[in-house]
Image 1 (spheres, rainbow, N blue to C red):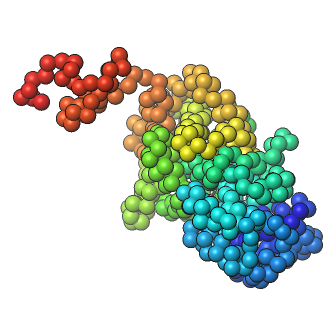
Image 2: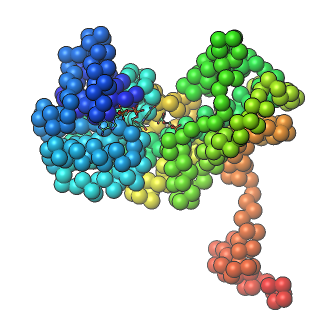
Length: 457
Ligand SMILES: NC(=O)C1=CN([C@@H]2O[C@H](COP(=O)(O)OP(=O)(O)OC[C@H]3O[C@@H](n4cnc5c(N)ncnc54)[C@H](OP(=O)(O)O)[C@@H]3O)[C@@H](O)[C@H]2O)C=CC1
Ligand SMILES: O=C(CO)[C@H](O)[C@H](O)COP(=O)(O)O
């Protein structure tokens, strides 16, 4: 089995080592020759160089590959993907060759590229998750499409992907560019879970006066239970770290958070499709808000200078609330994937999607099997519903900000309590004659239902 890989940065270099370790012959290229040399030297020291061939240009790559060719791209998303595709056309790829964009590309670009490169080569999309470590030892791989050529690489990717209890975390989740949509939503969920953990940390630190070490101990205890997740474990590790003067490492880090786009696209797509994902949107906005603090103001408000508030928190209740809010983040993400799949006719298989997330990826969690049990399971968690409500209430009274916790509580409450939409329907019809729907299913106006004072109207 032979594949090619273009782009040998954080992800590409590690995926290359993973591929050759699994017995796949690899022809690799990066426009920066140092990246190729670096990869070769690691491969040599790991005794893996035999199956690796670094090329210095794409023409050489095309000549060396058996036909039909299978080429993976791991270059930064955006116009670079098109530049590399164009260079590959000039280097001589042909219509039977498969080129898989494995970066965090926008799925809309993926759809456009499928058309653009029709008859030039088979263009396919696949989202990868797991960061450097995942790429090296087994990432989650969310592939899509039914292009000729997938069957050539599928077996290799199944081996390279993470493995959960004997099952590969590689799957073709749906049609067209749905793999990139699924990876985008994975990242939207990732943003919300990261922010949720940060909010729980904030509540324990500023609301209850606990030190980062003490919070790490709480997170470690939770990690011994079904709450265990990759993001919780790295957060605990980070909170235990100290700087050179033995201060908590987190206190040396500025609050402004960057983003590369997938969280924002998740929010944009959800709004466009009319599918509510408030926890995911809140997490994107929370990142935006971190960038509105002036550095001066942020320095004035360090954790050392701010007095501890007095939140009376029951740790078991906090744990339950955190667990429930986490489940709600996945629930919203899956609802978005389901809705987009219906709209675009992608036939995304949610079970396969969850299968890819069980190991290797950033949002892997032991409670994912509960997410897989569906909304009925989540709705039956009565004590957790109460815990989320109580904890959110206490958190808000501290005066601190809890955007994802509060959005998750509001999301669940909106789905499980009487709606007030009837009044908004009436308001719209009152001022704009937009029409309204009655409980009896009748489409009419307020004036059909009651005598309305013309002067007021
Ligand atoms: N880092 C992560 O945790 C994850 C990243 N991703 C996605 O994977 C993709 C790659 O990410 P990552 O590895 O982090 O990015 P890096 O920037 O670390 O690596 C990209 C590599 O591609 C090279 N490159 C740029 N242009 C070309 C070109 N025209 N031809 C050949 N090589 C080129 C770059 O060289 P140079 O540096 O010289 O420009 C660099 O070595 C992105 O889409 C990213 O969003 C997905 C999941 C996780
Ligand atoms: O895809 C990833 C993890 O799954 C990348 O690390 C991505 O860059 C994370 O998004 P952002 O940079 O916007 O935080």
